Image (cartoon, rainbow, N blue to C red):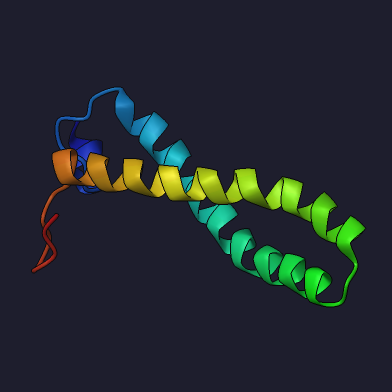
Length: 89
């Protein structure tokens, strides 16, 4: 339990591992999401709609996951987060 407090979660218990998995996948996919969105838009502007549709089928679920997991991370931090030096949730 002391290790969880060192990382900024209090009272989370066994959910800390699930939280960190969610945070890792959210961060990784959020980093990929921006360039992928630009690529899909670029393909549409060039009139390459077959490639645009193919990549958009990948982009939309990634975007939805990043958006919804961002809210989940926010709610977890609001409930279990520890305020540190002026940052409060």
